[in-house]
Length: 267
Image 1 (cartoon, rainbow, N blue to C red):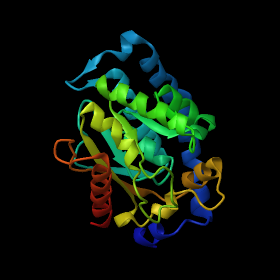
Image 2: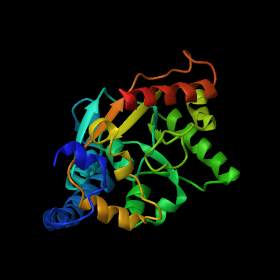
Image 3: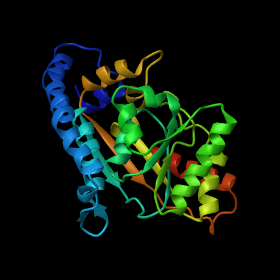
């Protein structure tokens, strides 16, 4: 069976799925029981966290990127990056397919994400998200959104990067939904660039629906299923940044970001 046909549909089961579980489950446990404590030690101990590695990285950032990248490799994702993330204060905006998106992005650039509050209650991922300075938002709550936008502005003004999924929710991997313009206001007020990021799974993106949550599929069920799936390509496209001086208004900024992501997905 070709990789293309494997990418096009979800692997239903069989001997190969159980074989993948046989070696991936121990690798996942090793990564959680050894890799996670080591990473957290480098994050919570200030003397270690501030150690500089090269010109741009600290030990804290390097370890977070390593841990997230290794986690994705345990799940069988082969990461391929196009372009480069901007340094400094940047609003990164990406299409939203699955919980995997956050780990993929974190493997390339450490940033504080805006995420739905339900994630805080997810096993392990919720704890990691909290430790990763995630900004939690209660969907449908106007007061919560106001607080999220204010926190985004403060972080951007202090030189920290922020990541958001402007669609507001996943859509089964079948389409890129409209981008909510209001989420771009923080970048406009802070005067920082917006960098669109296209996340594409499988050959030419034909595994978007495979990676996404299935109908009525729980978070735990999705993790178990993905852990047994065939190895797949995961592409991260860091696209041309958008600066407030170049485009007038948050609505136009949102439209342009979506257009660039869709174009990258279809290339």
